[in-house]
Image (cartoon, rainbow, N blue to C red):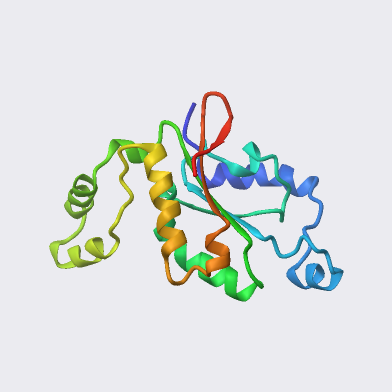
Length: 181
Protein backbone atom coordinates (compact mmCIF):
# COMPACT_ATOMS: atom_id res chain seq x y z
CA UNK A 1 0.00 0.00 0.00
CA UNK A 2 1.34 3.42 -0.96
CA UNK A 3 1.79 6.05 1.75
CA UNK A 4 -1.01 8.59 2.10
CA UNK A 5 -0.55 12.02 0.59
CA UNK A 6 -2.23 15.30 1.37
CA UNK A 7 -4.20 14.90 -1.87
CA UNK A 8 -5.48 11.52 -0.57
CA UNK A 9 -6.59 13.14 2.68
CA UNK A 10 -8.44 15.89 0.84
CA UNK A 11 -10.19 13.28 -1.29
CA UNK A 12 -11.23 11.36 1.83
CA UNK A 13 -12.49 14.61 3.35
CA UNK A 14 -15.14 14.84 0.63
CA UNK A 15 -16.88 11.82 2.15
CA UNK A 16 -16.60 13.38 5.60
CA UNK A 17 -18.16 16.62 4.39
CA UNK A 18 -21.10 14.74 2.87
CA UNK A 19 -21.98 13.23 6.27
CA UNK A 20 -20.63 15.90 8.59
CA UNK A 21 -22.57 16.96 11.65
CA UNK A 22 -21.50 20.48 12.60
CA UNK A 23 -19.25 20.70 15.63
CA UNK A 24 -20.28 23.42 18.10
CA UNK A 25 -18.15 26.54 18.20
CA UNK A 26 -16.47 27.60 21.44
CA UNK A 27 -19.11 30.30 21.88
CA UNK A 28 -21.91 27.75 21.33
CA UNK A 29 -20.40 25.50 23.99
CA UNK A 30 -19.91 28.35 26.48
CA UNK A 31 -23.47 29.56 26.02
CA UNK A 32 -24.94 26.05 26.29
CA UNK A 33 -23.89 25.74 29.91
CA UNK A 34 -22.77 22.17 29.20
CA UNK A 35 -20.89 21.03 32.33
CA UNK A 36 -18.66 18.84 30.13
CA UNK A 37 -17.18 21.98 28.52
CA UNK A 38 -14.40 22.66 28.59
CA UNK A 39 -12.96 19.17 28.95
CA UNK A 40 -11.27 18.65 32.31
CA UNK A 41 -9.13 15.73 31.16
CA UNK A 42 -5.95 16.00 29.11
CA UNK A 43 -4.12 13.05 27.65
CA UNK A 44 -0.44 13.24 26.78
CA UNK A 45 0.57 10.50 24.40
CA UNK A 46 2.83 9.55 21.54
CA UNK A 47 2.40 10.79 18.00
CA UNK A 48 2.66 7.19 16.74
CA UNK A 49 -0.24 6.70 14.31
CA UNK A 50 -1.09 3.40 16.01
CA UNK A 51 -1.66 5.06 19.39
CA UNK A 52 -5.02 6.84 19.15
CA UNK A 53 -6.51 7.60 22.58
CA UNK A 54 -9.80 8.76 21.10
CA UNK A 55 -10.23 5.18 19.85
CA UNK A 56 -8.88 3.12 22.74
CA UNK A 57 -10.78 5.22 25.29
CA UNK A 58 -13.84 5.30 23.02
CA UNK A 59 -14.28 9.06 23.44
CA UNK A 60 -16.45 11.47 21.51
CA UNK A 61 -15.50 14.81 20.01
CA UNK A 62 -14.90 17.36 22.75
CA UNK A 63 -14.62 14.95 25.68
CA UNK A 64 -10.85 15.00 26.05
CA UNK A 65 -7.92 17.18 25.09
CA UNK A 66 -5.08 15.22 23.52
CA UNK A 67 -1.49 16.39 23.31
CA UNK A 68 0.69 14.25 21.06
CA UNK A 69 4.44 14.30 20.59
CA UNK A 70 7.26 11.85 19.94
CA UNK A 71 7.36 9.46 22.87
CA UNK A 72 4.48 11.13 24.72
CA UNK A 73 6.97 13.33 26.56
CA UNK A 74 5.28 15.43 29.26
CA UNK A 75 8.08 18.00 29.12
CA UNK A 76 7.03 18.94 25.59
CA UNK A 77 3.38 19.18 26.68
CA UNK A 78 3.98 21.58 29.59
CA UNK A 79 3.35 24.71 27.53
CA UNK A 80 -0.03 23.41 26.36
CA UNK A 81 -0.96 22.15 29.82
CA UNK A 82 -0.23 25.60 31.23
CA UNK A 83 -2.21 27.38 28.50
CA UNK A 84 -5.25 25.10 28.67
CA UNK A 85 -5.28 25.00 32.45
CA UNK A 86 -5.13 28.81 32.61
CA UNK A 87 -7.34 29.89 29.71
CA UNK A 88 -10.12 27.31 29.94
CA UNK A 89 -10.64 27.26 33.66
CA UNK A 90 -8.59 24.35 34.79
CA UNK A 91 -7.81 20.76 34.08
CA UNK A 92 -8.74 18.18 36.72
CA UNK A 93 -6.74 15.22 35.46
CA UNK A 94 -3.88 14.37 33.13
CA UNK A 95 -3.30 10.89 31.77
CA UNK A 96 0.23 10.28 30.49
CA UNK A 97 -0.17 7.33 28.12
CA UNK A 98 2.80 5.54 26.63
CA UNK A 99 2.50 2.44 24.48
CA UNK A 100 4.21 -0.83 23.74
CA UNK A 101 6.56 -1.03 20.74
CA UNK A 102 7.27 2.71 20.87
CA UNK A 103 9.80 4.07 18.39
CA UNK A 104 11.38 6.08 21.22
CA UNK A 105 12.72 2.73 22.49
CA UNK A 106 14.84 2.50 19.34
CA UNK A 107 16.70 5.78 19.68
CA UNK A 108 19.13 7.40 22.08
CA UNK A 109 19.39 11.09 22.82
CA UNK A 110 22.88 11.27 21.35
CA UNK A 111 21.86 9.15 18.38
CA UNK A 112 18.93 11.34 17.39
CA UNK A 113 20.92 14.53 17.97
CA UNK A 114 23.73 13.35 15.70
CA UNK A 115 21.24 12.28 13.00
CA UNK A 116 19.43 15.61 13.10
CA UNK A 117 22.68 17.57 13.09
CA UNK A 118 23.81 15.59 10.03
CA UNK A 119 20.86 17.14 8.16
CA UNK A 120 21.44 20.70 9.37
CA UNK A 121 24.13 23.27 8.67
CA UNK A 122 26.50 23.44 11.70
CA UNK A 123 25.65 27.11 12.22
CA UNK A 124 22.16 25.94 13.25
CA UNK A 125 23.18 23.14 15.61
CA UNK A 126 22.25 25.30 18.59
CA UNK A 127 18.62 24.99 17.44
CA UNK A 128 18.95 21.21 17.55
CA UNK A 129 20.45 21.37 21.04
CA UNK A 130 17.58 23.61 22.17
CA UNK A 131 15.10 20.86 21.28
CA UNK A 132 16.55 18.50 23.87
CA UNK A 133 15.38 16.28 25.35
CA UNK A 134 14.13 14.37 22.32
CA UNK A 135 12.49 11.77 24.56
CA UNK A 136 14.46 8.59 23.96
CA UNK A 137 13.38 5.89 26.41
CA UNK A 138 14.69 2.48 27.45
CA UNK A 139 11.67 1.16 29.37
CA UNK A 140 8.06 2.17 28.67
CA UNK A 141 6.79 1.64 32.22
CA UNK A 142 9.69 3.45 33.85
CA UNK A 143 9.39 6.29 31.36
CA UNK A 144 5.70 6.86 32.06
CA UNK A 145 6.42 6.86 35.82
CA UNK A 146 9.24 9.39 35.37
CA UNK A 147 7.02 11.63 33.25
CA UNK A 148 4.23 11.57 35.85
CA UNK A 149 6.62 12.34 38.70
CA UNK A 150 8.16 15.18 36.68
CA UNK A 151 4.74 16.74 36.03
CA UNK A 152 3.60 16.34 39.64
CA UNK A 153 6.71 18.15 40.86
CA UNK A 154 6.81 20.94 38.27
CA UNK A 155 6.14 24.43 39.68
CA UNK A 156 3.86 25.36 36.73
CA UNK A 157 1.54 22.46 37.53
CA UNK A 158 -0.89 23.41 40.30
CA UNK A 159 -0.68 21.17 43.38
CA UNK A 160 -4.30 20.10 42.94
CA UNK A 161 -3.71 19.21 39.29
CA UNK A 162 -0.52 17.36 40.21
CA UNK A 163 -2.62 15.02 42.35
CA UNK A 164 -4.64 14.19 39.24
CA UNK A 165 -1.69 13.17 37.06
CA UNK A 166 -1.52 9.44 36.37
CA UNK A 167 0.47 7.19 34.05
CA UNK A 168 -0.67 4.38 31.80
CA UNK A 169 0.66 1.99 29.17
CA UNK A 170 -1.43 1.08 26.14
CA UNK A 171 -0.75 -2.40 24.78
CA UNK A 172 -0.93 -2.29 20.99
CA UNK A 173 -1.58 -6.03 20.73
CA UNK A 174 -4.40 -6.38 23.28
CA UNK A 175 -5.87 -2.85 23.28
CA UNK A 176 -5.70 -2.78 27.08
CA UNK A 177 -4.70 0.37 28.94
CA UNK A 178 -3.07 -0.39 32.28
CA UNK A 179 -2.38 2.14 35.03
CA UNK A 180 1.27 2.17 36.19
CA UNK A 181 1.26 5.12 38.60
